[in-house]
Length: 206
Image 1 (cartoon, rainbow, N blue to C red):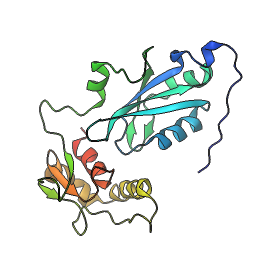
Image 2 (image 1 turned 30 degrees about the horizontal axis):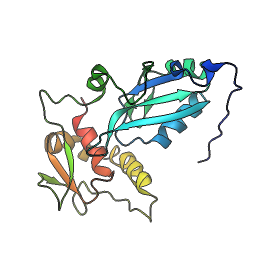
Image 3 (image 1 turned 60 degrees about the vertical axis):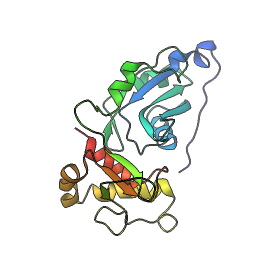
Image 4 (image 1 turned 90 degrees about the vertical axis):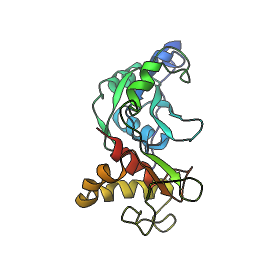
């Protein structure tokens, strides 16, 4: 899908370089990528300058939060009023970004957007041939992704289609928490993104 980008005139330094024109976006789905997030805010607010999702250095998975920078104050203010809107099944937490480099994230921000592991183990997605695991979720298991890369689109497409598909499978949704929560679930994709990220997210959601 093509998106139209409209840059505002350079009114003052405040519209182009001031980091107050950035927002912090928390509670992101682990399957949401920069393209999804940019399209969302361009549709709602326009004038998106930059989107940056923060990833784990070891697993390369999204840490569930991002920073979005805008060209204008109007776009920023519109974005700040979008808190509690949904994207990819998650209620977004939106607040002004701290006035510092977006790679520097406070401990409080990380704690508020990553699953709590104090009282329960987080569901992990691993490669079935490279790691020990508890539950196999690849084909031909009940948890396998019926959509195929190439035939049904690229990697992002088949993950998105799987999310939409499984949300209509009442029997599987009822089994996710009792069978997968806190387990090491395995497929063939890791460390790349896969449908297992969707299952892990659903297993861990409160």
